[in-house]
Every structure is written in structure tokens, then in C-alpha cells.
Length: 130
Image (cartoon, rainbow, N blue to C red; front, side):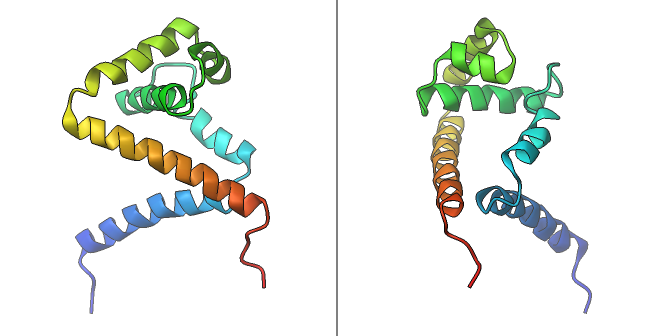
């Protein structure tokens, strides 16, 4: 029996997303490797594709609103000017009037907190070794 291509494409997409989270949480990616991955997209010096720009806006917003970091500190880490970070935070805040985006941002922030907690748990001794 041959599985239809659409089902395979869906499974591949799910496996990539879940695999990325699992690799981050379990420490398969070191911080340096994870940073290298996002430096090619979210952290890159140029504006990039609109999706990369939007991802950067979301990251800045979540770091500021949910994790309570200042725009100055976020700018330092992201290699951006403070005013650029402030603009990206305001961009997401203005768009949260859209109920679908508001729910998505809330869920993404909770997911980020959970991923960080899981990563910390695995780093402190939770592992798959018998």
C-alpha cells in the first residue's frame, strides 16, 4: 500500500516541527548550534523575508512582555538598535487587536516558557539513559 503524498507531506512537516522542539529540549542542539540556526534567520543583520521579520517581532515582543526584559537589553542581545526593538514590540501590540493573533501570541508565549522549563529540566539531569 502506498501512502498518499499529502499525508506524507503533513507527517514530514509535523516531524520537523516536533523534532526541532525535542532537539532543543533534550539538548541535542547546544546553545551555540541553536543560535547558529536562528542567526541565519531571526537574528540576521538584514530585514530578510517578511516571515523572518515577523518572527523577530514576535520574539522581541515575548521577551519584553512575557519575560520582562527591557528593549535596551533585547536590542543588545539581538544586535539591533533599541528603537528598532521598541518598534517591533509596538507592531505586535498593535496587531493583538486581531483575536486570532492575540490567541496565537498568548499560546506561543506559554509554549516558550514550557520549552525553556523542559530544557532546564533535561539539562539538570532528566535524561533517557537507564
